[in-house]
Structure formats: C-alpha cells, structure tokens
Length: 305
Image (tube, rainbow, N blue to C red; front, top):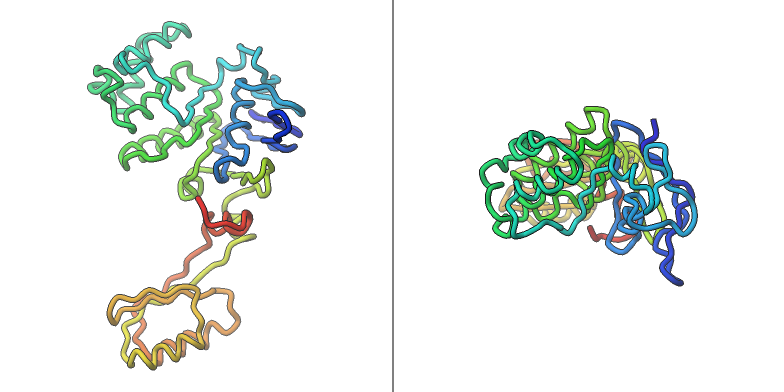
C-alpha cells in the first residue's frame, strides 16, 4: 500500500520555485529519508505533505486521499514533529499531552504509557520551560504518537540531541515501522539515514537528484576502500618514497603506527600492498564500504552536511 504518493509536485512562492516537479512514493512499513542541504525545498515539501501549504502544481496523496489544508480528516491520521519545538512552556510535559489528548479524544492512559515509554514519567511533571532539548524532542514525539497515527513525519528528529535521546528516538522509529506503519523523515545526519532508512531521496535546488536503497546508492556513486594499519620498520624517508608511488586516498599517522586507505577497486592494489609491506609490518587489514556521505558529495558536488 502506498502511504505517500507525490506526483509532479511544484511549490512556488511568487517567482521563486522552492519545489520543482518532484515525484516519489512511500509504502507502508517503510522509513523514507529526505536528505539535502538547507534551502533546497525539503521544508516546503513537508509543509505540503502535512497540509500546512497547498501545492502550486501536481498532487500529494496521503493514505489514499489528496492532502490539502482543508482535509482535516486525513491530517488526524498523521503524526508530525517539526524541527522547532512548539510546546506550551508553562505547562508540564504531562499537561501538554493531556491538553492534546482531550482535543483528539485520546484516553488518559495513552498519555501515561507514552511518558513511560519515552522516559518522561518523572521529569514530565515539571514545566516544559525547564526541559532539556532532548526531553522536549521526546515529548514532541509523544505528542505526535498520541492518536496512534498511520504515518509519522519527522523534521530533523535527533538534531543536536544527547546520545541517550538519539538512541531512544531511533529505537522508537524502527519499532513504529516494524509495526507496519510509515515514517517520512528529513535529516542532516547521513549516518542516521543509513541506519534507519530503507530508501532515501537527495534534494537539491528543489529537485530530487538521486533516490533509492542506501546500499544501492553507495554501490552506484561511492567507492569501497581497504585500510592497512602498519607499524613502520623503515625510515620515514623510505616510507614517503613508497607513499608517493602508492598514492593513497587517505593517510593518518601516530608515531610509527600509520593507517593507509586505498581504493579497493584499483587494478594494482596487490602491488601497492607489497610496496607498503616493504617498509612496514602490517598489523591489520580491513575493507570499508562507501558511505552515504560519499554519495552526498558525489551527487551534490559539495562537502556540506
């Protein structure tokens, strides 16, 4: 089942085109990552997906229905967490959830259960103004989950959070998808996208420029490396003469311990390793697959993010 169906979506603000004729779909049980630098159209797309903004052209169907600012019924089946926290600071965490639970007709026990799941049972009694950033983000996700939505839309869900909050939130994202529900998430963390997402799309200048399974994208755009960790037995001068012929992708040194990273697909890799063995004792060899960061740099041609 397609939970999100976007066809030829365009969003303009006056003469400026924020989203330029993009199409994609997301199926039930999938975690879909929406990636790209700031200002490339991700937030404008999310505003259309959540019914906060109307598409200039094209269509956006959520759970089989056209999503518009007027379609309040389908919006009730979507949980949303925006990057900026929008909580009532003077109320406690529990009171924040109780307010929205009453608005949506959700049982009080649901509030208690969510606070416990996100480790906010005790701290949730305090005013939100005293919450850490991680606590606020956990509370926002609790609020998004109140109505037991079929689709969760997250804008930078773990940006700038402590490790404990990051692990907790990621675990709940995975559990939500495993239950057969769907997650659409925008994130600057390529490592997070690689860990959580079954598919990702890279945005740039309002367009989707690459989309697919992270593993497939890494094979298509990235390179695999082999890293040799060695203990230097020759002089540094002899070692540098060898390095000049090997031309590694990356090299790090800590005294006589040196790590050399080389392209795994290089035709003369075996000879290059032999040259390195002539000036040092190899203590470890391991391969390293391409990363989404390399895919990002390749498809966007930049080193941000």
